[in-house]
View 1: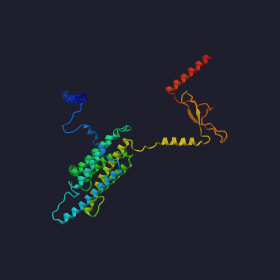
View 2: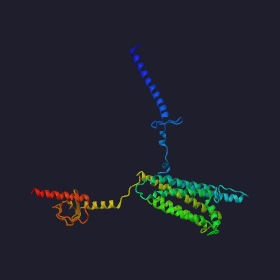
View 3: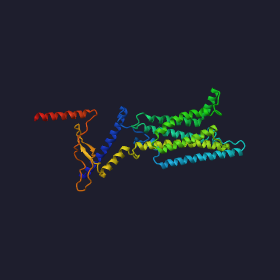
View 4: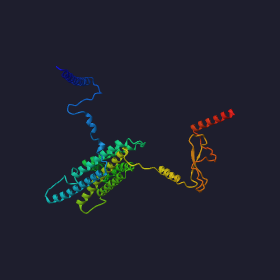
Length: 378
């Protein structure tokens, strides 16, 4: 065997030995780690690869759209679905009148288990999820010293209860129970028994949400439209607003209620979008009033108006940083003798009437000590 062939054999055998040692060490390490319970070694699944792919999965906040065009498409789709449910209700009313004994409960907006109640419950559940997402981001705000972010948990609970009410018709059961216990209807058929608690609870929650959603004007607008839809639906439920046609009355009342649910979801989604963008620092920063005043003063300084120049005046308490004071004496406007911008002012400093700080007291003691030492040396 030649020397070249033997060297190739030795190198190839070395690679095979290293590969076998890595496999053996890996198997022994996995066995020892599983037996000893070492948490530093990641467990491997028999059906999935390395679990690092889970880091690339979507988070819950990624479901909130960042573009307003996507939210506009959501609004258009919701309005289209509401219009379709209205058309189906009108169609089933005509078909039920034409067919003897014909019942289409899925399209009847007056029934509990219809498509309209299902869609309204879905909108309220989505609004509850958006409120929870807002809470998860909002609670990390640094300037919320009073803990106002907790209102979003209450908003989520309120939306969840409203979704349950729409799906299970809890308001009707509550109305019958209160009429049986109190032996009175209050107004009409007793609808006020469930409208009054709704107005009190949702009014308190809504006022707090409006205060928290003030920076997002789009969310405030959507919330106002939701309140308007609920107001019209409640007025028609109480009989304050009536139309001669019973079918159109049901369609308008149910349509306003579903419109209110849709706009409530849009307000929650818009505010969640605003909170996420604010947390990521993607919102434009608003300049404060003091910053604008300082810019205005800088412009006045650069203009070089006579009598409004700055002079450098030493502090009276020995502070190392000199302060600046406006010179009230007029400056001659002759171009041949330019006036300096900063100059020593002969005016003695005004006496300090406030209480000195520790740093100023220390500086004053050091100054008096230096003066005494200088007098002793003379």
